[in-house]
Length: 37
Image (cartoon, rainbow, N blue to C red):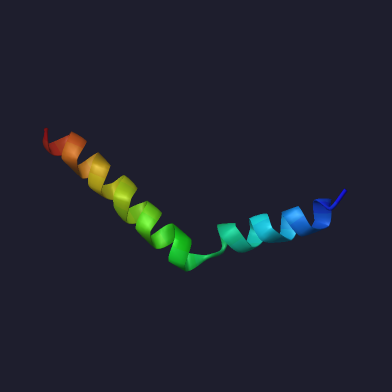
């Protein structure tokens, strides 16, 4: 089993700014729309 490789890829995804910036922007936009409505 390649648990080490999966763990490294998971850590890389969790620390990937280019992945979290759009996710945070999308979540923030949805929360803002729900808060306004």
